Image (cartoon, helix red, strand yellow):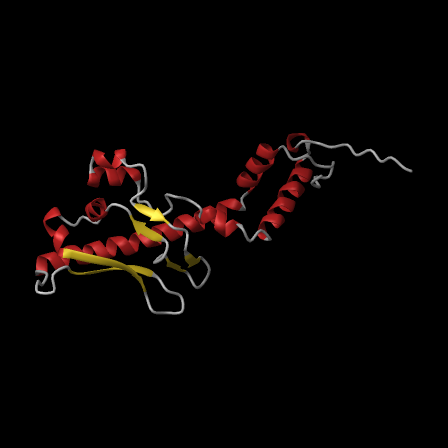
Length: 198
């Protein structure tokens, strides 16, 4: 029986060419990791607008919440390639309608007048939008109220694009040298002299 001894190195002990090889090996593994999409969207605050904006529009009561206003149920369909779209109709659950309306900049005196649904466009690659209707079938929104709601629709649509940009940024970062080196150091991977993972 032969005994083969292999000298192992930490990432920091490798020469630069070996480091490059180690990084590229892990990057290729990541390209084959189909769980990355689930990891990216597994974020309770994925849909939540910026904290400072919510505090500014909703007041300090927002600080007291234990859950996001935009709860993430993780039933999300999206693409960040040439068929770019985001279908969050089954992923978003609004947990606080009053603060949601405050974020949309819909005034308090309209709160009881407005019924909303989050819907998707009817297309092969659907996007997410918000639809407003009168709560009372006998009431009709004024021109001023319609303008407020149109602005709210635009804000919601822009926010969905922001969420998709967040997902894309997280996906792209996952394959960067910086992200891979963080993973190597956190998990204390060991390598052979030429940078092959042991």
